[in-house]
Amino acid sequence: MLSIPTLKLEEMLNSFDNFLFDADGVLWLGNHPIPGATEFINLLVSNNKNVYLISNNSTKTLEDYGKKLIKLGFDNIPLKNVFTPAIVGADYIAKNKKNNHPAYVIGTSGLAKTLRNVGVETIGVGEDHFGRYTKSDFLENINLECPVSAVVVSYDNHFSYTKMMKAANYLVNEDVLFVVTNEDKTFPGPNPSVIIPGSGSMAAAVVACAPRSPVVIGKPHTAILEYMKVHVNIERSRTIMFGDRLDTDIAFAHNNGLKSCLVETGIHKLTDVENLPRDIKNRESLIPHYIVSNFKTFL
Amino acid sequence: MLSIPTLKLEEMLNSFDNFLFDADGVLWLGNHPIPGATEFINLLVSNNKNVYLISNNSTKTLEDYGKKLIKLGFDNIPLKNVFTPAIVGADYIAKNKKNNHPAYVIGTSGLAKTLRNVGVETIGVGEDHFGRYTKSDFLENINLECPVSAVVVSYDNHFSYTKMMKAANYLVNEDVLFVVTNEDKTFPGPNPSVIIPGSGSMAAAVVACAPRSPVVIGKPHTAILEYMKVHVNIERSRTIMFGDRLDTDIAFAHNNGLKSCLVETGIHKLTDVENLPRDIKNRESLIPHYIVSNFKTFL
Image 1: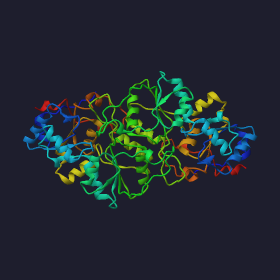
Image 2 (image 1 turned 60 degrees about the vertical axis):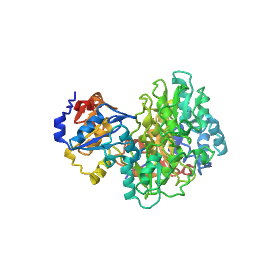
Image 3 (image 1 turned 180 degrees about the vertical axis):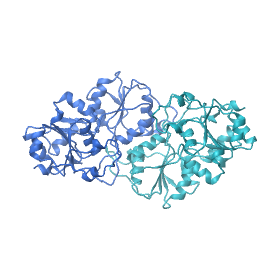
Image 4 (image 1 turned 90 degrees about the vertical axis):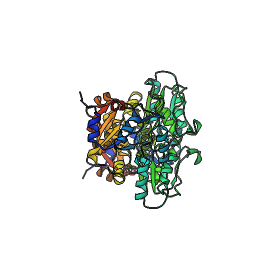
């Protein structure tokens, strides 16, 4: 049996200056703050702690996050402390692209706007269906007349065969960057019994037929913390990540050398840690340093 | 350096009674027979050998194959000797389904017809786009009012986000069978520089968000040979598979205990065998017993 300590308020305030939070399942569920979450953030801010929001959701712009933070009572988290794979991926493309062509985006208009905010124009958002191209059973060619600087794959409810085929064929050109925002295969909706496919499912399809592997930005990968280190003062030994998912949040902390705390208000609970298969890949990275049932424990 | 022997006509005729052939890249390319192929089949038939066609292409009905065989000069291969994952998968569903509901098909009308030929009705073929359901950015529910007996995933040029979501949610019901016809991630078209996503790319997306794993029918898996053993007399020790792909055809022979011969008229050549990474998974299964540059070598 694993023994994972709970976290005491005083120990926590003495040990850490930087508090990283996942959003969905930790601070809020859909459009409702999780009980105790706003009060806990207030407590940290009043103790002069740095509070950061690290979400894998790439469908929103920073402005959308600002509105949501205010609406749900988290108005003391400044926008400069919000980090998503959309923001970090857009920065990566702006800095690494080989030309000034637009990015081909399999994603939402919010993701496209985040790219445009750093000067990367986009094509591809919205409907693009096979029926436009041919009535035959096979599409033997695809129009790539508009050259691109990057292919970005994220959550896209208009995902289609033709989008997958365009992405794969754009990537034959080695100058084209290949970015996947995050690998979450599903994400939580208001009805927990309904499976909602996430970026990771779109990415699995494109990666299957693409001629090379992508750069993946979101948790549990390290790109977001690398970006944060350039923009804010994060001393790893004084930093803790609060999250509800072992494979994204807790692994992100582990992969970046941070302490981690599982909050049992979202996807995973203590039993999920205890039931991790012995032979699972990277098992150690999935075990949190601390566990709390909810943030009311600190109030 | 690997040493793979070539195959001599007399040795071959003495050693084998059953000759299994992949189609595309081995007998034909698109709508053109590969030089020497029809003559080689004639030679085998005139020596009273059994000739079988084992394709991973599940978009055609058996009748479609019949027309193609006649058109390209392979009219001495009887239709009862043609096997595809569509035929074998349809038989699997007909025999294992828990009810008489239709199958939900992510695939072509040809695949649906193959299912109907064994009494399995289908739903799902054709366009099904997000725009039909909501104008919001997220689809939080999906209409599963029509219950199904199985989810079948194959090549579908109308593949979409909503199809992926329907498939995943149908599979929450454990009575629903989950069948993937084949895992070929791309397939060859008339322009070799164009990537055409195949069943394996659609399957990767559905498997990513689905709550369980599929039964996979096509090469290199063993279901097709299991099915053949019931319907035709195949003595393994007297059987050889001719194919152009290491990961499907040659591995299929290996997985079923058959001899194999790589024909260098399609995807893979001797250099691909020589360049197999030392640490690749199931490396041994990818190495053919024999190699020939083309079938003219036997004429």
